[in-house]
Length: 313
Image (cartoon, rainbow, N blue to C red; front, side):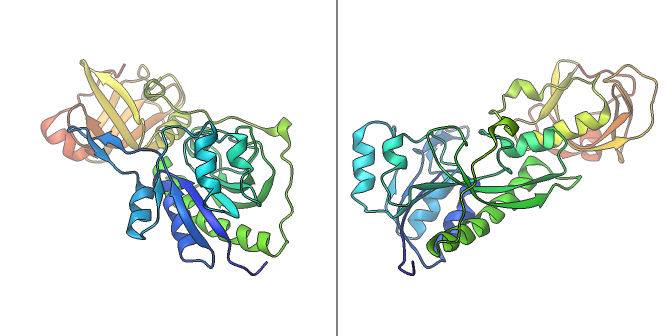
């Protein structure tokens, strides 16, 4: 199939932007973009357009922001655009069958895991939290389930020891755009073989909550190291000291004990904040005191001393 496809792109956050940009630079035609409605942001609660909408508007593309994707109206609107294929990347809503089946080639999705591992809303975060050494992206044919459709193409990506959810998401977003283009090209040439997922190997990656960031210092240092990285930048890992919340970033495992109760500050200087855990110590290189910005520990200590012997709760 050498004819340019008519594509409808559905996506909302930063993660979806590289995929949209890749399509816009490719041989096919994006006839419309669908994203979530504008949301209030910041202290002033001013309505802010999602990243995908901003890119679409820069390219003069029609943008649809339905409050609901259910019912006939939305499907009819999309069908009138005569798409050959729907491309979905972190749109944020489960699409009904009448939308998934309206284009001749159906709907494909860029998912940030090696399916069937980590089905759900937070695959990148859970890969880090669980200490995985590898992640990747899967191009999947969407069906009515939650990330259960046949996989068309997978590309692997190593997880680095200092990766956070933020840094890994950036790499996977770019990888997703490149893999998407490969998949569409192979689809047009009839070279893609859809592979059913082995549902017995499936794991879930549910949305994170703020409460999951409250650290349990009785866990071993390597476990906390993974958790803090997986929760960065949101919802971030935190603990309390003298009634104030402190958020922690850039952890490093220290393979020695200080013989103190887990959560105890064992050392605090320009090299970092050393805290006792259930096994080993954790050195935090960045911190965010309540009401202040994220900063290196050395900068924090100038106006906010963290005394040895104090215990985070």
